Structure formats: C-alpha cells, structure tokens
Image (cartoon, rainbow, N blue to C red; front, side, top):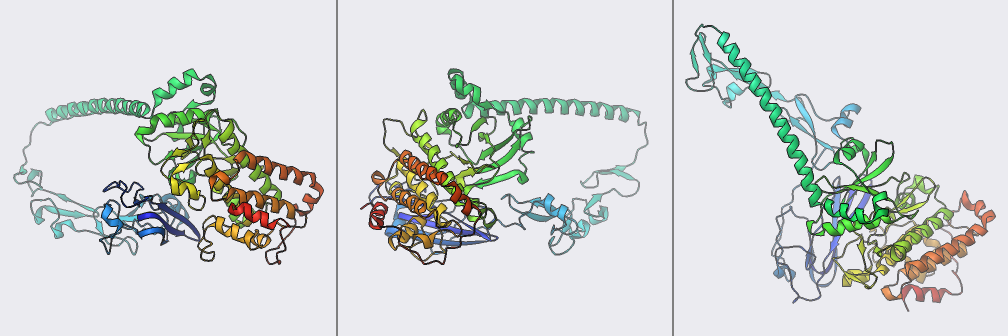
Length: 591
C-alpha cells in the first residue's frame, strides 16, 4: 500500500537468486481534490498484490509532495481516509504470511524423493501455486515435518461420539462405537442399542435391493442435473463475457471470422493437461501463460487472466476483433479465445525462444546474442510498434513496452506480445485519460504525472528497451549508485559525462561498430526526452534503426569478424563519442 500525493512505492522481492520489483504510484494534484474515501483507487492511495514465491522483501518509497507512507498489510484490513494524507494514525499493521515448502509441487517432490512430509501425513499443494505443505491425516496428530504423526486414541481423549468409553473401540486413525454383547444397533446414540431379534431376513434383502435401486436412479438423475447445470453455467459465462457480441461482430467481419477461433473450455483444458503447473511459461500481475498443444499438434500460448471488469466486456471483445486482424510478422498472432469460463482465455501463437529480457540478462543466452542480432531485434520491434500506431484499423498504444514483452523465435525474430493493458486511441484524439498502468522503470514520466496516455508513451518505454540493449542493465535496479536506480537517468548521465562506451554491455563493442552504437545511442536519447512532444514518432525511430541496420549489413565482411569475437571493453578508457557530443546531450535532455 502507498499513501500520499505523487508517491512511488516499490517492493523489491527476492526469490532464490533472482530479484524483481513491484509497486504502484498515487496521483493527486492538491489536497482539495476529490478523494475516494475507503478505496485505494490511485487518488492519494494505491495498492498492488505481492507475487508468490518470494524469500525476501524490501520496501522503498519516494515522493515529491506532502507526507508519504508505504507499508505491507493484511489484505482487507486497511481502509483509506483523506485525513491519512496529513498523518497516518497507525504505528503497526497486521501481516499474514502465506508460506510453503520449497518450489516443487507435491508430485515433483515425491518423484524426486525430496518431499518433507513424514509418515501418516499428506502433501497438499500450496494455494499460492508455489511449493507445498504437509498436513497430518485425520485421526493423527504431531508435526508432519519432524517425524511420523501418531495415532489419536479418541476413546481416551473423549473426542468420540460413542455413548461412553466402554462402547468405544480405537483403531489406527479412527474409532468405532459398538453395543454390549447380546445387543445390536447404533452405539453412538442413547437408546440406539437393543436386544437382538432373530427373524426372516428376506424382507430386509428385498427392502435393501429396492433402496439400492432408488439410490442408483437418484445418482443418475443428479449427474444429469449437474451436467445441465454445467452447460447453463458455460452459457452464462459465454454471454457474460460478450460471446453474443463477438459472434455478431465476426458475422459482419469476414476477415476476422476466418482468423479468429472460439475455443471450448474442454479443448483448452485438454491442451494444457488441466492447466498443469509444469506447462507454465510465464506469470505476471495480470495472469498466467501456459503452453498448450491442440489436437492438431499445434503449439499455442494460452493466457489465463486473474480478473476481468464486467463493465469493459464490449471493449474486450473489440480488442479481440482488432488484434485478430493484426497480421504483422513481428506481432504475436492472436488465434482466438474461450468465453465459457469465468475469466476469458486468450490463445496466441507460441514463440519458443523466450523473451528479450532473458537474452540480455541471462549470461548463458547472452553469449549468442551479438550486436547484429540486437540491432535487428530493435529495428523489428520498432517496426511492429509503428504498425500498431499507424497502420492498424484503430491506432493501438501498447502501454507496457518492455524487454519481457518482446519474444524471440528460434531465428531471433522479434515478436511484440502481451496486449493486456493496451488501449485504442481514435484517430481524431491525441491523448486518452487513463489510470496509470505499466512497469516501473519503463513508464513515461509525463504519463505518470498527467495520466494522459499518448503514443509517445510507448516511444519513451521503447527508449528504455534500447538503453537496456546497449548497457545490459535492468530498467530499475537499486544495485546502481543512488540517483541512478532508473536506467533512463543512468544512461543519459553516461552520455552527459562522455562515458557511453564504458556503460556498454561486455562483448558488443569493437572497432567496426562504434559509429553504429553512437547512432543508436542518439536515437535512444531522443526517445528518452522528458517532454512527449519533443520525442520522435515511433515510425521515425523504426526508419532510423532500419537505416543503421542496413548500413551494418553492407559491412557484412567486418560484421562476421566480430560476430563470434571476444570484445571485453568494459574496463577500456572511454574516448569521445564524436564531435557532436553537445548536440547529442541536447537531444537527450530536450534542450
């Protein structure tokens, strides 16, 4: 939770050896503006869920105005009030830890022999989806992590339901109630035992058979009822998620009807082996992505969102229609959707080689990611964004451009993905007022301050991706010196201090590509200008990057010399980046 005006709260989370950052930003122009009492809507107060699987968390907060607070609190405990902007009336908050053991599922840990559960206990999956817990079996007690649980003698502990201890017989994990010798009946209720009466059992057999027949018939009717109930529930979700609107739209758009497929819940459940955790290829704040295999052996990526806003169903259907019409080699293709579940499922083409983020920051992958590939990926991603901004039937602002949302196939071809937060901006509008959404480190500062989304917001985020490609640094890192946590600030300061070549990631610099790197840095600086109106359009960025790339291709003999070469220039003293250094800095700072 963050409370304050223009407050940025970050939660740095470490899981094993990797770290990530989540957070939120509050907006309020002054203390007199309308505030939603009791709600963290972003005006004076904002909130974000903590991801699962963390081992360590650190809170940091930054602000420009008034008092600010950031804290972790039990979900649903804190109610925001406007008075809290002046002083928060709490010293402490309750916190609940949803802990679990390890990072394996029960099935994985049992098959590998690493399961921590001792005898007479059961392994249960953690509700968070990360790790597992041990739970002693019914009728047993003890610590299932330390030793085998022991049997509870219900007869001695008086937790039985028998008439008395004398009518109770303990067994391993359970107990039973019996009647004294010579009597029969129910030993757990007063008057339940009675003298045995010998009589003809044939009527009892007939009665029993009749009861069994009634029971079987009732079960069949119940199963039929449940099937009809499930069918009606699917129909309800289909209508609720805009299925009728989608069918109507598809019938009027011939091109979309040929490319968009409406999948059934059973098809996607089968494709993902009932959403097996082993098939998860990505988790984010908006949902989980599974790898699936359709009946025709076609691999797909299935995105299962966490929530959907019922008031935005029509907009969601419009997004499905428009995205299904996008046919660009550098945009992940939307194949269809499923509307029979409570939350709609989106089905995309599957891109096998992972994300650009992995190839920049994973040392094993980075060794095969040379300057030529980096420049090509940058040009292709810029071309895809240019298509979304200019050539789509309705201009689309991606709103969450980052290296983790640029996928690479086996040939290192870029594929822009994840349109979960994208927005359509009609051609007669320049900006769109929205709640600020995106990823810290990539967010346009002007958008954060004004809440006015423009296509120049994507340009700034893409500038951060270019800086990431050049430096190999993460967009937001508290390992850098104070004041340089933000990559954009760090990169521009390197340009200002004439340290561009020192800031480059090891292995991409050589004598043949210095000029190309300076030109890409020039483009990056233009994208990172604080004022959106001073940034170039993404189409201009795409043209410039393609020009630089074509120049590199003309130098193919030289490029082959450094494609597999070792160029460790990190400790090399940085020379001048050119006679136009002052002009480059002017571009960076908008002067």
